[in-house]
Image (cartoon, rainbow, N blue to C red; front, top):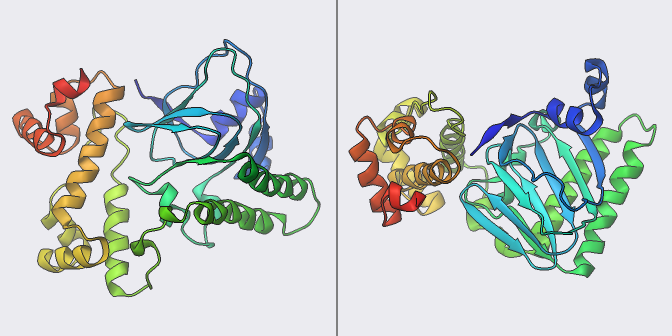
Length: 301
């Protein structure tokens, strides 16, 4: 079951107790922490979305449930948590972990680039990277710089911290170059601009967090009209930049949300279909069977 979205203020209060709002405001939109040893029997992390980004470096083998997928890291783990996607992290009995993590809001990067454009933060991207002990030590040095910087009195320290967050992102992509696809490295020409606007418009409709919430755009024609382009042109552009048609991209994103809702909520199949823009439950069942080769009820088990 997906629990309510956890805000950054909620996170601070869970960690530090009832902090006054002015202190939370002063903490700001970025912070970095050492991962305290997790005692055996500690309550399991809730499967929920957060309204902030989180990048964690965690020792040892780990298992993370992220949307509808499960990722295993055999040695150590770098976890890039996206506010759009619910996740939780399994702890085995008597497991104790060490490591570090930083949390920040999208607002923290306002005017400094689009953090969501990086592969590990995109839908269908790879948010979990399994790393060796040697790579662990390499990444650990970046967190060390963060701790030193946030404690400093340097006037522009948050600019430095933004750079260190980006160093984490780029270090991960250099360690695992397969994370980068050709679409991620192209120039900012008109086709890529339209593609970026389409993907942003698509993602803005998610996540679905209530059976009363419904997407507003769910056909290629509706997206094209919203972007003020012809549907044939939009399809051609997306095919060039992503290798997929408008319909395929829509279907993949709807199927991703459908799998997550079927797996982690107790909503009816009809309710989930309605949230995803299907007026008739039978049309949702037909869509799901076409994309997943099984029915919603069979997938849910």
